[in-house]
Amino acid sequence: MNQFCPESEQIAVLMEGRLTGEETGTLHRHLADCDSCRREATLLRLCTTEPLEILPEALEEKILETCPPRQNRRRSRRKTTRIPARRFPVGFVAAAGLLITALLGILLVSRLKRPLQEPLEPVVQAPEKKPVLGPEEPLPSWDREPEKDVVEATVPEWPPQLPGEEISPEQIPILVEPEEEFPEIERLPEKKTDSPTKPQTKTRRFGALALLNPTGQLSIRRAGKKKRERIQGIIRVSNGDVIRAETSAAFCLEGGHAVALAGNTEVAVASSLDEKATWLSLRSGEILVEPDGSLRSRWTLSDERESAMVVQKTRSRFAVAVRDDRVALFALTDRIRVQADSGRSVTVLPGEEYTGGSSRVAAWGSKVEADLSGQLPTRRSLFFATSDPEDLEEGRWSLETGKIRKGQNPFLLSEPRKKFHSVKLNVAKPVGWDREYTLRFRYRTNAGRLRVQLPFPRGLGALMTDITVSRDYRNRWITVELPLDRFLVVATENVHLRPHDRVETIEFRAFQKDVPGSTRGFVAVDDVELLDQ
Image 1 (cartoon, rainbow, N blue to C red):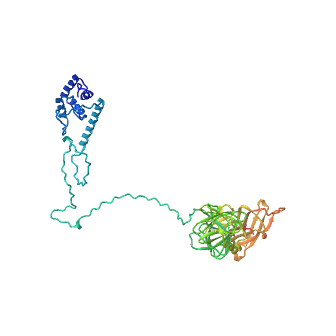
Image 2: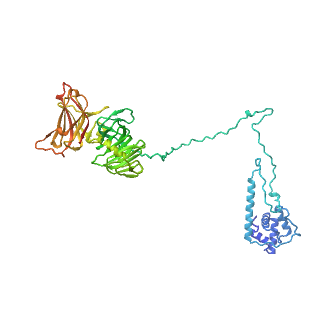
Image 3: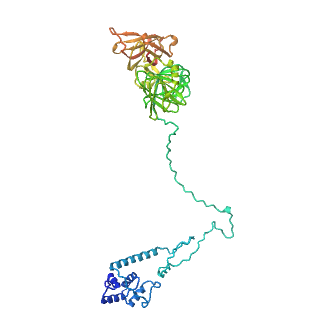
């Protein structure tokens, strides 16, 4: 198309027969000479289903030559019944022409992208039944695909056999696909869920506890050891240390609590730091507990399965036993508030037992009280001091004169002087003295005399007594108990000591003049206790 070609709208108007005779002749002459405009007129001609009357026969022949031949399309103008052409708006005809041009372009591009030769593969497909809609008009030759010869693909034999050579089935190699290696996935640790039948345990922290004033045949097996040791004097116990009573026995715990054990009873004692309570883990047998009456105390009771119950602050006497493989609590003198590990709290009345769940009436606790109440210690420790480093770190006392002799069996050793050798202890919390108190301790000396004195503050005076040491007991450990009513009261002139005056210092002296020969004297002390009656 050049600048002298008519617009597409004029060609469309021509096809609709709305031009004058002069304009129609001019366009007819142009279409006879211009291939581009004649092609556009051909497209507009295809938009109608019947021939138009306005085109001359010669021009129509030229236009039809540019169209693809279609069977039964051309008819003799003489035999065709002329029907008036449909009238379409000019804009609609132009848009239809552009749409058809775009569709033809897409069709040509898709055919160019089609591969020239498809791979030969044996395809077995059931014939598809198509609905019969009537006689199908054959496609024009320009719209048909070239016929392809279908060749059946054959699968070659494996392994290939050479002519004249036979291969046995055993010689045929077996093809095994290589296994794909996957990287090992790091498995996360499985979370262990608590069994519904096993009670949930709670992690606790433990500390050491002093065992005082032991009576009866008591032995201890330290944690991680097999050998048992006989309990003598003050010892410190912690979690895992098991105390055994061969016969009825008793001891006091730090804080003034008394515990009596029946024969063949095993129990572990420690300090529970989380509950701030005394931990009793009963393995077998029966025990009777009498807390210090001056203060309320907390207790944590357990068994070998580590299921525990916490006894809230109480002054009540109670019994503990293993019944049906579970620890059981029996209230004796007052009601006891108990809290299990699950958090549930239960009130146990006197004469009732508690093993978990709810309390119920029982009788075994009264029998335990009748059998063991006579074994309870009648004296409680008001003050004690040992050579254990942990005992010194607690700050209950301090060593003013002397030193700690370390070793397998540590003790407090005197500081040597010219005239006497002394071990002097300072009490952190002064104790009010009374004539009914008793001082118990272990000592060893090479002197023939040992002086024990309890001076009062501000130079008011002192309580004093001397112990004569015979030759047979020198250089040997001896345990003694000295009632304070046997001490000599040495007071400053015009000063009268009263019961509320407090003791702050305990001193042990060995005089050099009482040591035979030229040997230097010494005094060793351990397990010092001040007991009430």
